[in-house]
Image 1: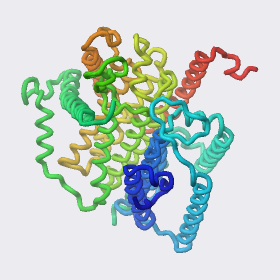
Image 2: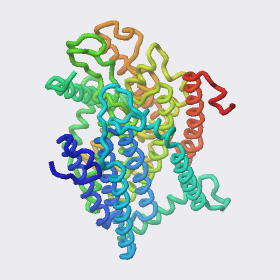
Image 3: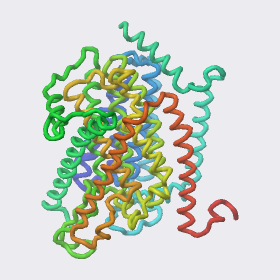
Image 4: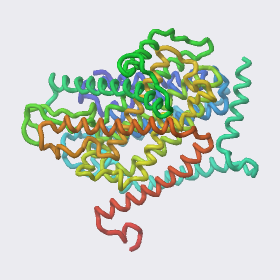
Length: 218
Length: 360
């Protein structure tokens, strides 16, 4: 067995061939998708690559037995966040057939630096905390010891940890999300009384029409 | 029970059986929809191919397969080719968690089927079945979105934008109407949800409002009338699939009807007691699985019938009505209902209402 790419490595080494091969394949898919994501000029292609990366994350969760977390990842990230991202792209810069990314060089370096920093930080934390940890594979209905690293993780285990042991961080994160929501409303809200009723639909459609008009000429 | 050749064979057999049953249902549904619509509009409908026109769908399918699959010049190849696949794959994958009947045992004894093989009448008995279904319907959004953008043409783009806004919104409503079911049943597993409704304790009555909202959101999720703004013929030519022809169009068409069958089957699972029925009471008869499947399919066909009925009855919603219905009605009312169900379930479990609602 060779050392596979991806964060699931230390826990799998020396344990089983199947999961290791799966981890390697998932890792390769994620790396390729990740590279495509940052190198392509096309926003929509980038979004499709992002789907690949996020699907890889979900697959890694499932490989570690966190079924609930894996499917939540698919539901929330692939099913909602990337869709919203594409929706935004279509509303604002959907020049038909082309949607180019033109980040300035400084921005690219800043992004690369941030990526390396986050990678280093997360890797250090994970190796320090979980480097020598072992996941116990639970078969059947054996009760789970509190705080133990077990696989598979059931929805009940997860709920217990999240809403009892870690409820304060959870609530803090929800506050941050609430703030973001309020911020979005403040930014998006226009205080003209004229179009009060169909405000949801009208301005957006106008933007699209405009963009289509521009796109059609090219 | 261990994994060997028989387990693999049973697994493959289940997949093939589900596929055949669902394809038959889709073929009949396409035909039935046209006939039902014809009856309601005092027309005749397709009656030439085969007895009562039953073979019409097959004829149409062959026609679409033989037609040239045109690729317009301005399309984005990757996105354009990917979209029909992203329509049809999640549609079929979502079927994996539909419980068509109770599981049964071959060759084993006792409740745990020792020494034999336990056959689930569903492809995958997942612990997180409901989540699987929601994930698959979330991925299905991409079909319309990418088809709309990748076609490089005006009407598909408008269809794609409408599709994304509509389906994201109704995805939330759909999920929120399933959550009360999950809370009431205490499990995310579809078989568990069916078992929680045994002896006629169908969730339809206690959870009538979520059931109604689930149905409305299901209509919107599958882009069926009156929520078919995505492919409104009178406004957008064909909507997101305007530029698709031949086999690729057939995949979109197929995906829509598979989605209708899946979501009707899941409505039955969540609210109408799934495969439970009046005749064989809880495994008392050898034929219980067969009867279970019959009850299940009968209920599903009734729900599909309501889909058709609404299609010919209701006019299409306006875009702002669509959004207002979802965000101002379905989601808030569902949230309130969810809270009520959660409090009730917690009360049943602890018998301590004052502490639950915050007093003392």
